[in-house]
Length: 251
Image 1 (cartoon, rainbow, N blue to C red):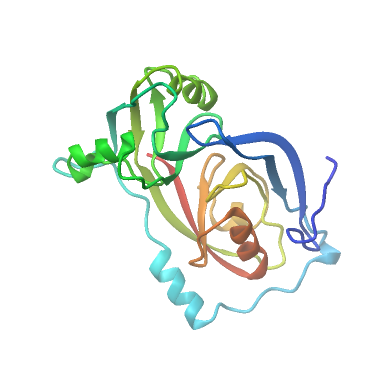
Image 2 (image 1 turned 90 degrees about the vertical axis):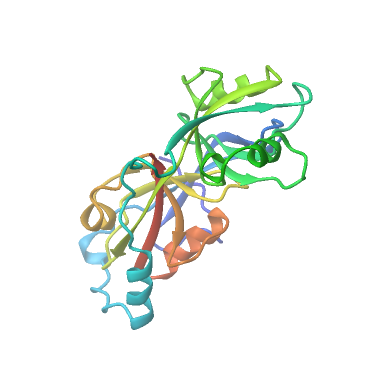
């Protein structure tokens, strides 16, 4: 692959590859027209760094606090992990009140809810129990019966003033990764304006060794307690020999 390297997002063992993929909000406004794929090439044995020291006490504490198990399916009486919601727009052109990430091409990921006081999502949330409210970090897996792709679901939202969506709560979990001079073994992509890093593929490396159950389609939401923009998450990954990664995946 050809590399397009940027000074603020590369290191001696990482390069940034750029491909075209827009990320949209619900009004079809483009946050950015670049999908960025972060690949960390394998480090040759001769170039490998020596094994890293044990994590410090604060890092161990962070690992204990963040390394929570994946949620099991909701038991009877708990809030549902999958449910449907109907949103009513004043017109087909009206915004629903959310920002969506379509990078995984299968589901819509709700990056952010827009607080206006009058959006269709706020109106819906005010009318239902807390367990059925739409939240940041939820996944949309169907829109008006459309499940083919994130792009088709996004298009369906714009074609009607009544939008019936299926919401899937995220399964959130954490893993502790020791780099130990190894390549991470991840291909990551993100859209400008997003709030996570999408795992496109997992190869041989630190992640496959320490977190073999992490898979393509999972999202990185936090690194050593840091949340924020994709660039901030990438810097946090590059800066520390020990990583406590917070993940999200569709329930």
